[in-house]
Image 1: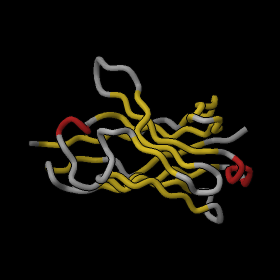
Image 2 (image 1 turned 90 degrees about the vertical axis):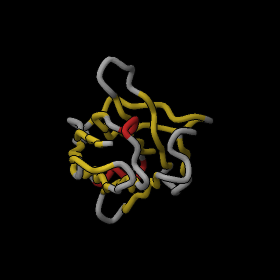
Image 3 (image 1 turned 180 degrees about the vertical axis):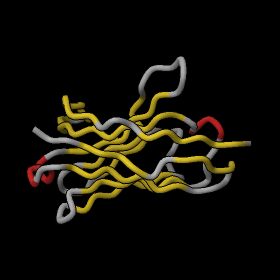
Image 4 (image 1 turned 90 degrees about the horizontal axis):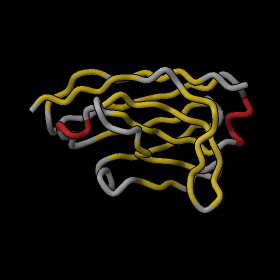
Length: 120
């Protein structure tokens, strides 16, 4: 069992930056691929960025060049650095532990979510 706790969300002006963090409760964190999802009101949850256990990362086209996912296996933490934020980035952001097999496969471990609001 892995518990995930996100932090770092908040209110930011368009063009600003935020850094989200997700802390895992278990040292087996290092064997999982990790990902950040987001869900805006009235929309489906979407994959934003993922990172494999070896550090290989992938991004949704909408955030490429603006967001950076990273992980620290010693601290059981995955982070999402978000720069040049746009109003359409506003959502609740969720951390997930899953696997890679060509694409990212979400596991059953989700955090509680952290809200990001971007004012225009």
